[in-house]
Every structure is written in C-alpha cells, then in structure tokens.
Image 1 (cartoon, rainbow, N blue to C red):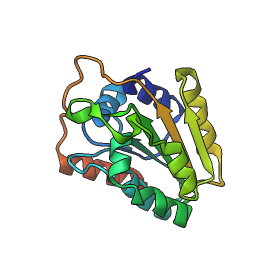
Image 2 (image 1 turned 90 degrees about the vertical axis):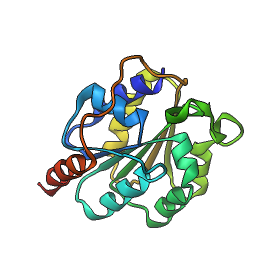
Image 3 (image 1 turned 30 degrees about the vertical axis):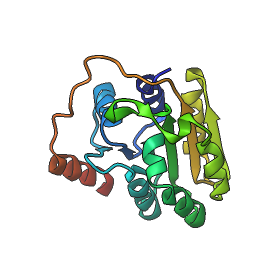
Image 4 (image 1 turned 180 degrees about the vertical axis):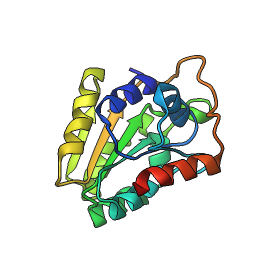
Length: 187
C-alpha cells in the first residue's frame, strides 16, 4: 500500500469530521480522492498539520483528524509531547510513514532508519497508539479511534514510497481553503 491507498482507506471511516492534511502530495492526494469543505489542505507549513488539528480538538466538540507524514512529524516532535501532555480526547492523529520526504523527492526520512514513531508517541504519554501495516486494517483502525472517547489516538500507517501519476496541484488558493474550512467547522 502506498500513501494514496492509505488516505483512501482513512476517508472510508471519516464522516463529518474536520481533517487537517499535511502539505504537498498528501493534500493533493486527499483532494483527488474527494474534496470536501471539511478538509484543510496545508500549504507551505511542514510540521504543523498535527499542531493545527490539536488546537482544533481542544476547542471543538467533535473529533478532529490530522493526516500527517513521518518527515513532518519528526520536524515537530514537540507536537507529540504536547499531545501527551494535554490529552485532547477529540484528536485522532494519523501518521503515514513511508520512510521518506515524499513531497521533495522521496529522500529517506528518519523513520527509514531506527526511529519508530509509534514508540515515540507512547513515550510521549499517548496511550491509544495503533500501528497498521496492512491496507485492509486502515479503515477499521480509524473507525475505532473515531469512536473511542478516551483519546487522544495516534495511528501510524506504514506504507511504501511513491504516488500515482496524474495527481494535480490543488486548484484552490490558501484563503479559499481557509474560508470554506472555517465555515464548515462553525456549523
């Protein structure tokens, strides 16, 4: 399974939850799989998808999903520590770990070596941590995390590197993405 297939499986379990998605290819793939107002596509802010979703989870009365990448998470490891400290029950952080910096040419990331992000999440004080390695288990893991009220939940999905051909740049500007997302979470 590649990231694209993993995102497709994630979105099978998501209903009306806001989704904050990591910049670059992950956001482009999410858009290609099915654009919706509740998707916040990151543009040019690597390492911050989880932090933004965390803030939303602290102030909204519904679950919030972060779709992040392994390289992005390692750029902001303080995000996991903050989640472990504040314990936001409404946050489902999904880390797609392809062992690469996918949006910049698939150079190996830290998780391609010894770094195990599921173990880092547990060491940060997060109890609900799931490691998924098979495509057929992704949607059920996300559904379970969305139903779990003891949160926060972290799901690490290990994937292969690569992406499908023909994924275009998102045809929305930053202000349009922000405005429609903010309207969707205000309702």
